[in-house]
Figure: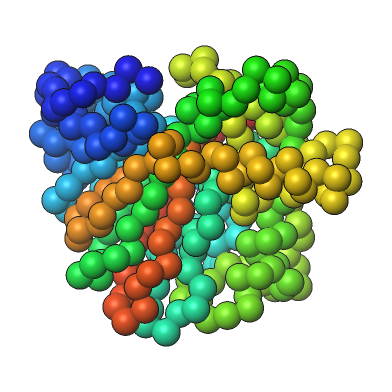
Length: 289
């Protein structure tokens, strides 16, 4: 991983790791202004080293947020949050008192039903509760590396089908409860499915990582869903063992930038009496290999 044991300087930035598994807080940069190529390269290096990085006390309007995302790639437009009533490049995730469902309340990697899932996401805190509402992240390099050699051999070459039927559409479980952030449930919605390797190779680091998740993975290619379920469930739960994780407590003005290619995450549904509002912009990725 190349994780450092203590705060260090990285060019203009200071990088403070959160855990030995993943995660670092970055200071010494104002993300609201156009960044130099050198600073962008430092941020990318920190992301590749730590898988998810965090910034505090930022003041980002929508234009600055999108400019920051474009420094790392094209903006990804989410098909199921694109309900036609807002800027399609931005998703505002709102949790209101009384919500019984929230966005991201199970361990997942974003939007993996797409043929080219997002490379990453930039999530910015606009309004947060006084406590609770944390986000957890899990390192999928470590999840793969912790498997036995026999399991690694079994998974080599195996592919998994990813579908969005559990998170969108008229029959999705997310529709069975009150949730303030809507997704497409209209009659024109159609399921999106893609097949990806169970073990992917990161296109920048060259490292192998586990690539299955609860929100989208439904079965192994060439097997029935019933046949797939025992091993698939085990792999998905294995991927967020405590020693693979870090936990981030939000403040207004905090921003998280995670590498969607090697990280799973979960939004804790432990706030019931307070509002929480986050703004997310995703970065386009490439085909999983």
